Length: 385
Ligand SMILES: *Cc1c(COP(=O)(O)O)cnc(C)c1O
Image (tube, rainbow, N blue to C red; front, top):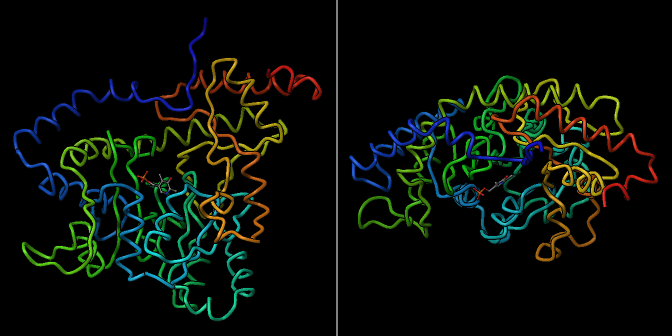
């Protein structure tokens, strides 16, 4: 009986890194400091360097990173933020938490990221009172593919908006050779365990090249405290733990190699899946994709997923319902039509991909997908039952 292939798996990496991780943990115990100590400082510096950004501020999660970034830019009630609906829910919830309004635009059908033409199209149709209240544009480097930051940057400069990158899925990705995390005014990362750089719990980071914004973020993440007994703002309790920082520091040293591995596995997938009625991931010429997820599009998505599951192959859907169609977000999505987003959500399927996945496992996944399409169309849904 052959082994099951999950869409993501952590124990293989854990056993490879065990000694390094235990040594880092011992160091934290020896130092006896657990919040905002030397480990966080060291990891912030290393991560900023990795992203080609000047400053990095550790926070409690990617969701908090987004909220803190918006607060640092002074986004609040009555302001508008342009973003996408084809994303994880936090992108939008952070906007709502600071009492601003999200304006959802459609994505590019090939890269799945914010389509600059759609931004321009949406702007033309927006009442001028709302247009004037736009403060920020918040593109998402989805699945590890960077957005078209040249065009988004040009639009932002023309309109006087700030740019906040949601880079939660894209550590190490680059646009025209420049790392994500250094392409906007601020960038937000997550260290949720499934991410390309994942911790052993929650964690996040905001990067920036502005010393003033970095200083603001340091105040906001710690109760609005400038120094002991001096409150400057309504802050959050949102800090990266010393233990997480120490463990993430160990993993950061392996990240470039892991990304290479993801890219190799992705190209093996592409070879073995060619010629099937599927849309495979695309890498724009100016982009470096880090394949946080390997997402295909299939018209018979749900039948294919069931068929694979029966053969012990795990898949996932990121995400089944776009944000503007979620019950809570209806007020901001009313009357909105995002045809690319809506079609993608019905057809996307994330195949197994993580650095420790074996090429033989990729081959097996691809053979199973081929077997599905070898069946006559009429019997595929039945075969998947
Ligand atoms: C994971 C993720 C977040 C949120 O990060 P958390 O650390 O889970 O709070 C935000 N945006 C995107 C696109 C994500 O994938």
